[in-house]
Amino acid sequence: MEKAGPRTQEGIVTWLDEIERRGERKGERRGERKGRVKSLLQQLAARFGAVPASVTARVEAASERDLERWTIRVLTAPTPEAVLDDAGAKSPRLRSERKPAARKRSPGAKAVGRTTRTDPSRPG
Image (cartoon, rainbow, N blue to C red; front, side, top):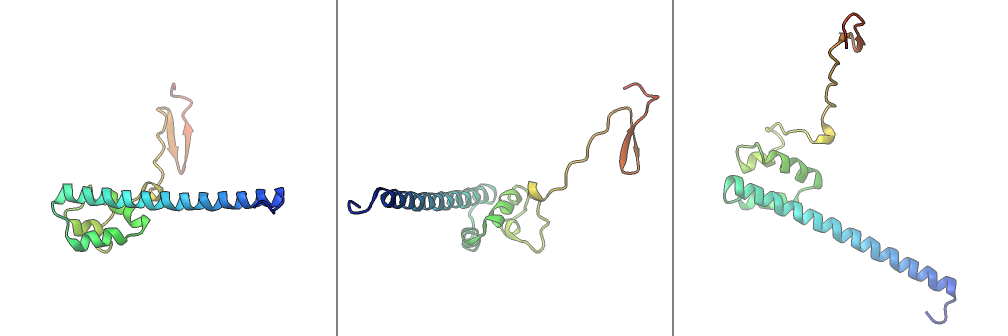
């Protein structure tokens, strides 16, 4: 790098820094995924006992989305296979898939169609 000018050296260093950041992000994502897989397998074992090899293999090969769903479903499913069953089991919705909560009406409000109006005759 001694023969390169200052601007070229700065560009090279910037490029190397970007490559390093990309590698770190990729490593972090891999680590997070491994942790999610490990946690789900531990939850399955704690809830159902020994986890069948077929279930372990599916968990290890699962997408992030599946891991999220299964991590929630393990709380209510009757068997390890039911945790992973996408056909028959009705899975709990992820928070991002849920409908928004209904708004509470104030004590003096009346529901009119889809809107809420306050009743002026009621003290509020």
